[in-house]
Length: 142
Image 1 (cartoon, rainbow, N blue to C red):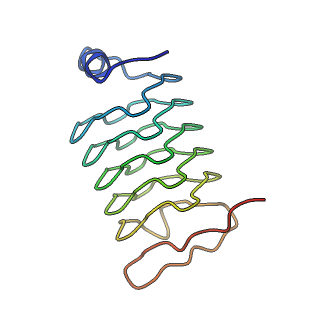
Image 2: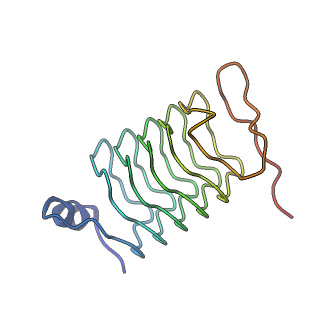
């Protein structure tokens, strides 16, 4: 189901929180506050969500490839089995975020804020960070 930015914001303001399965690829939603939104299995590829609040959001199995997610607040969001290939998460807030089993190939986590004890990345994988907590790229799955 395709939906425009205006429709999504209007429905959200009326209390709707479940937008699972929507196609909002390429959408521009800069600086919006959408805490607790559910976008499971949604297509957000190429979306521009810079500076937005998606805290406590549900984005399991969503496509966020090539998305602009700089300075986004994903604190305590569930983003399991999602595709974040080449997404820009620089300066993102990832405290308590669950990114288990997600494709993080070439995603940019430069200066992203996260907690080693509360933020979950690929299960069983050791997280390697430099002094600025920039994530090193995982090997692309075969």
